[in-house]
Amino acid sequence: MVLQISLIIFLYMSLIFIIALIKKDNSIVDVFWGIGFIVIALYAVVQSGETDIRKMIVTLFVLLWGMRLSYHIMMRNMGKGEDFRYKAWRDTWKYFIVRSFFQIFMLQGFFMLVISLPAWYVGFNTGGPLGIWDTLGMIVFGVGFFFEAVGDHQLDAFKKNLANQGKLMTTGLWSLTRHPNYFGESLVWLGLSFYALSLPHGWYTLLSPLVIILLLRYVSGVPMLEKKYQGRPDWEEYRAKTAPLIPFLKFF
Image (cartoon, rainbow, N blue to C red; front, top):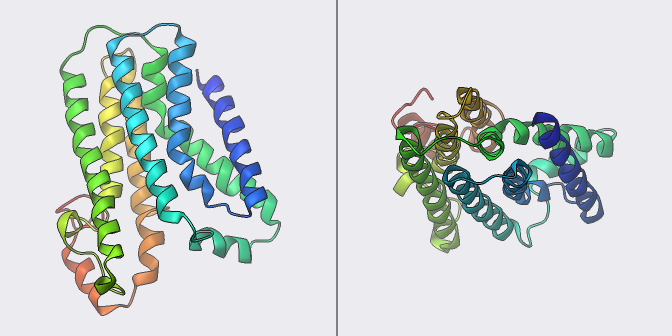
């Protein structure tokens, strides 16, 4: 299973890398991030040669999550050129093409392999009837999808209002956590991993939400986005009273 999915991800990310080279825009990898999970989920189900209700639900949830995320990022980035994070790397990295391939596309491919674990594990394995873990998975996924989708919508609406130029988004879900969309994404994969807990050794899939929570909180999410706000009085006030990721947990 792992080798098959690894090969699919390698081919997929290599294709996106070639497109990025042609367009001179590495940030398109963000647009294709969600679609990659759909490819993985569908591949696993097709290769298993079997279908059951659990596989259908998980695949449908991945499709819903992946399409919404990719569409949202595509619309957000349209006409704006390369994202500032990728642009900074383009301007400062030596051996830019080689580093981009390994440090952006292959590294993201590796995390895609780990984070998608619940989707392809359920896809490859046929289990028994739905139970309590599946019900919990649906609830947690639903809450996560709500936080991610509504959080993104609230931020988009805030930015489109010219009266908010230069201001911080601190209302709605953004009053509960500084990154409701990231919190939602963490819950999405926690919910999907619950669907695997009824399968043999399914607890391995809990690695997925653990990795994405740590990534978003300490590596690629919260630290990178918040760096540009450091020192602003309004930001420091917001930061002091609002949890970085998990609502009401100011230390996390």
